[in-house]
Length: 301
Image 1 (cartoon, rainbow, N blue to C red):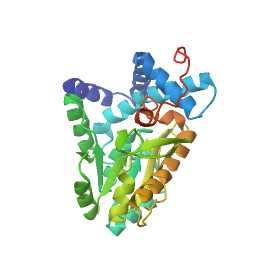
Image 2 (cartoon, rainbow, N blue to C red):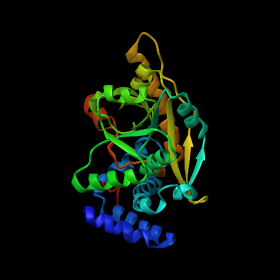
Image 3 (cartoon, rainbow, N blue to C red):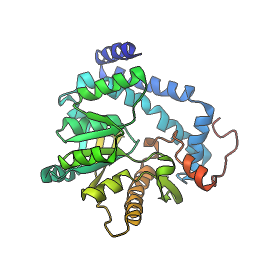
């Protein structure tokens, strides 16, 4: 698989851009076609559950669009050898970049909070290539896939570490590093129960806990592909500062709620960008009961 992906990347880089992304469209459509029906049903179910829409056809459209976009994402990554070292700049537009610059200038470190929305892989690569001291915390993949993606991340000067202990991340913050955390997925029973799309939802507390311990800002960053501009728009929001009282658990919940509010607002504006195939409320249901209304069996058809 590793050798195939390398050869496929070399082939893609030889093609005109229009053909590259034409192949991406085909890959995206194949991805939706091959997606298991149960997973499609889950995506549609969650879109309706979150009240993104109450129209079944629209929910199906959003679910499909959020899956087929992976075709373009794959092409973006395969193009890394072609767009490295600044050649990516014509693909990118920054909004609110001054928030990252201010945090970098202080030298105290920061938490960069992102989501599985838009091309998060490209986001990490661009931020690292632009000189921000980003250390992305990721989950280790299997075998050749892990080898390939880490090699291509390195092409974009991105440093990735697998999920490590709090002590290691604090050490990087003390050096002035930016810790990149993606916090929108189900954290299992280790999360805190806070509102998300109107439901009490188990949510990861890593950004809130780290920010409170080290008194560093949490900087939410998103990436959205605009077909009108034909660019990825990277939006850097104003920093969120952790609550700091004598009640650590309350502080964590309050800060995490603010982050959920930010994510929910973004997802409602760009629902096609989010990873609806992920079972976001799995552990919430396990721990607190299944309150989600199950849709009819023909939802994904």
